[in-house]
Image (cartoon, rainbow, N blue to C red; front, side, top):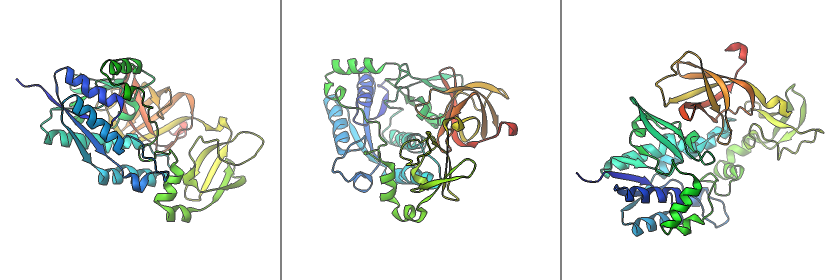
Length: 370
């Protein structure tokens, strides 16, 4: 019986490179693949510096690892799909007054779909990534759970991956801490990657300036929106803003409004080009509705009303809540108010370390309507 053939998504970074090497050492027949997802010349900053997971440098680094460890490596150009499913989505979300989550959208609609399609073409039976998460089979479902290293855990960004893909998926570094990964990499002569600074920006916006990106990508739409009104929650006018796409719920800095006390963005009203401001206490809400669900641990929630930890953005620690599934929506009532419930962001529900499932925050709701 031959070795199991596995396709490894390689970004050129430490985690995915070590994932490929670990699988190779475990006896898998490894095939490396790097996805070219965006076009630097059309979306990157105009500073002459190309960075990120899809740069030529990243592709060359992945190929160098493949050559050194003696396995094939391919580059897959998915710029058209990425442009439609991720970059256009990202742009339209801001133009509609929402705050997008492109990493979740990429995992959900691009990476696993493209990876598995290519894996099948290359006769690979499984696919692997360098994500910090764990996966196991439980009865008839494949369950994602938090990584061993909670500080690096990426399970929040994986809630949208379908069961058909999860059953073929491996996370080789998900059971290790980042320090352990660095030590294992150093022992294998990968100091160059160990010392490389990690990238946290959006891959297609290396300068991390989404406002600049919107101005460059859709200048006519941004110009048409123009300036609008800052108002308080009671409707009181307090100043002018630069256009609602340039603000996110919970934002405090860069508002250029002096009221004698700190104010935050409470709401974005694209219909009237208004941005509602208020005190921090007004940001705290208790209820929300979540749609666009993908359930992981169960086909649907096993009880009419159950308790779960609900995480409403990547760096949110999560809050205990009651969740209730109604068809393709989950209504959430937090035990304690949470700050900045943001339409367009992902909400992920946890039972212990296990991902129950997730969806997109649609809006805050009044508790009396639940």
